[in-house]
Length: 360
Image 1 (cartoon, rainbow, N blue to C red):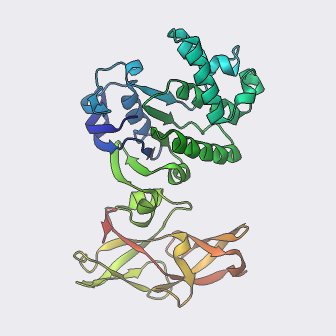
Image 2 (image 1 turned 60 degrees about the vertical axis):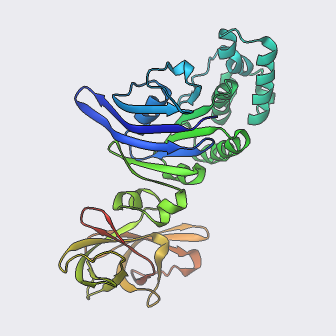
Image 3 (image 1 turned 180 degrees about the vertical axis):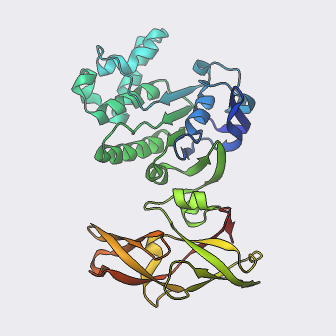
């Protein structure tokens, strides 16, 4: 096993810079997830760790050794891709053992590793089958099994569940979490799906445009985002953002006027730091579950109900206001009224300046 250190890592393709001085410490045995929208650089960063992309500036270290000039095969890394890339004419057992057979490993050692890997992934009964006889989830297990066979010090996953349907993705998330717990090996996982990130990670690395925006435990990012981007990206449904205008502020907090209401609606937000000037434009963030019944929070909002999505014990109200912004409101299923307009109360909120920085 080994930790990973990125020190001011830069990646350029020609004059175009993809990664802008990324620095990160991944502890030995940790499960870290890189998450962000398409094109943010998460796969490029992973490929630099694997050695599949060169490092323009900075250092990549694995197990305390700088590996910028080390060949991928010599880094002690195993990578699992979105594509299963199994040999169709080989059985599962042959697919698992192929890499070791090609490097001349002892037959007894290969057999031991196959038996151990098949047991870990619960695919022992599939060893004589060929890939065409397997389901998508079983093929992904075999692809992960090939990585386990190498007994690496570091696992790298590049969106491995993207080809699976929703039910299989849930099952494989559980399998990966169990696998990490059983092996105790350092794992770095790339995904654009923040649900995968929240359920799998010890820590999440949120990237945007080649820059690390925030690193932290899943619930820390959810409850204490540094900026509007992280607040909106982590959580499903995403955080609601309401335009507002600062009315007054002092050492105890700031009072803002919420947009899109028939009457003046004010919200007072406590702040530890300096308050923005009166007249400043800000954004109030409210998670769907932080709305409550009228009169039971910090400020009431009158909204127009567009659609109600019933999901069993929970319902989501998709609403709009006169200010031309939408809201998603989470309620218990039996607490949703059949009405064109409802009044909800903000029970908890976040405040961001017009540049997206969190005001604390």
